[in-house]
Amino acid sequence: MYLRLARRLLTEPDKRLLWKAAWTLGVGGLLSVAKHKRRLKRGEFFPPFLYLSVINSCNLRCQGCWVDVAAKQHRIELEAANRTIEEAKAMGNRFFGILGGEPFMHKDLLKIFAAHPDAYFQVFTNGHFITDEVAAELRRLGNVTPLISVEGTEIVSDTRRGRLGVLSQTMQGLETALKHRLMVGVCTSVCKSNIDDLVRDAWVDALIKMGVMYCWFHIYRPVGPEPNPDLALTSEQQRRVRQFVVDTRVNKPIVVIDAYHDDAGNALCPAVTGFTHHIGPWGDIEPCPVIQLATETIHDGRPLAEKFNGPGFLKDFRELTAGQTRGCVIMERPDLLVQLAERHGARDTTARGEVIEELKRVEPRRSQYQPGDEIPERSLVYRWAKKYAFNDFGTYGKHFDPQKYRDPDLQKSST
Image 1: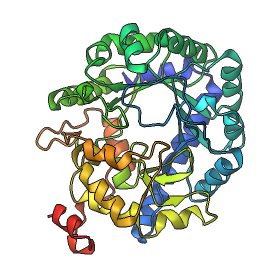
Image 2: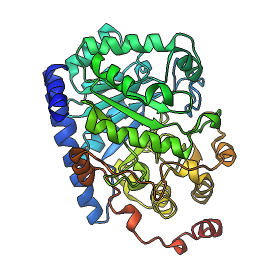
Image 3: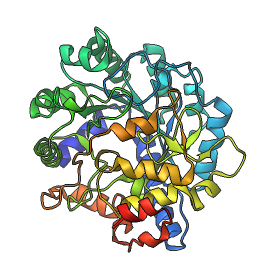
């Protein structure tokens, strides 16, 4: 399987883009993690990878979307985006995830990529704005991989994404990106309406035949103003997805991303471990894209390193959540987020201004943390990569002291 994957990597995408990814994302990413580990030993903190939602606007209206896509357009302007990326690069970061809304609706998105040839960008997109002109520019730049979202068959996609003809437009964008020999990925928010269609060998085989180099199956989280909890997977379905990911990695010549388990199959949350944090369209610094609460912003003139490294909401979020679960706190313990927000005076970072009430309405459910049902990696390559670069960095092994948190409600919930 590894030889087949190597052959695909060497023959299907543009070789210049392959080596750009290998150097900037591969070598640069490993060095970023190494610097992160050294910082942790000194008692310092800065996430080695950052996600930026550069715009709130989108042409779709997906079920369970947490972004204010229908609100007045707001974006991180070019100067602010460049300044933030430069500050992160000064800390060793080389990889940035770009989200929206729909990122390609940002008028200066390609200028952001062009300003940072020493960084690598993964763009989460529905593919509708990947034209020949855009794809040609992405190939020229060489430091961008589009991660195109496919949410099911034609009928399922139209329902999930709130528009007619969504799948055909998405596939057109995917085909255009592949025609220009870009490094292309496909992601799916797995839910009850698409698990039987997409979590199967036939779909992965189709992606390989098209020329897709990597895929990402992440679990649907019922959040936002219209969470639609009926789509959320059961515990058994989540285990089925995890087993499929592990098996696909050893059976198919395609890279499979997994952001929620270590090499032994133990659950983890990248935001809690400090592997990633998120910056929203208004410049707010949040734990992750779905937790729309913040006390810090990129717009106040203070160094980014100071905001990440100091005490406050983000640090308490990591420590308190690590003491409660290895899973997704917004699914398992939304009450903790409400209490943390109240303790720190964290602001609602949405346009709708209803996040606290939305969290109070969330019905707790199991997430990826299912003790006793861990599924270890079968692939030696993935096992090594996760042991070195994607683990909990000792986060869950630290002693949690509830007395550190003076809020009586937090102390009570931590015991």
